Image (cartoon, rainbow, N blue to C red):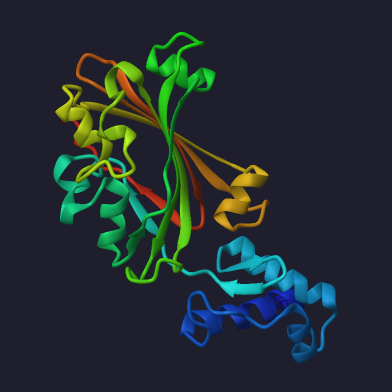
Length: 265
């Protein structure tokens, strides 16, 4: 059987992808407009739009309304080591403010600090249940757009790679460093340990889904690209959950790695 020739969209998308991978279009650089691509390739306007949509779905390109299409600033993968990232040495490596910053450092990237929304409110029902709170009780929340970049000296440079909201019981974290913008080396888990609530167990649940409109906008991804929803519960040796967190992560950027020791038999 003769090999099927790729269609126009696939062929032109492959050509652009090749230029991106070769460095002809650097990460973060502007790509030709839809009209420019239409003229240079002699294709219909809708075909040109479909080319960019195909590359957006792959995570190679992102489009900003009214500004054009750009090469995704980061074309690799961030590996989230689920079995080792919360060890004290790992999450404070190089003075990192937690596991996420340490992961970026290992990739040669910089954690670009953005304002953290901190407050006290009634958590969602599932969070209240995990923390063992009455449905009318308040808890501390920390809500962040977690941003990576390459230039530590340019505050405008960088890209959001994760949305995260963490909740802590008031009787554990109220009026402590956990309610401050900078939680210090090692992040909130190091502060929990200092408060007498060292985390000894972590449970995480991951599923893939379509992003909510506001999530897609914050992550600068098309609304038909999948994200990982990761629910994180951190508990003490006694089994008390002292942190419940929700992370929203583009599937094209993140990979998960786990290592276990098994009994022989």
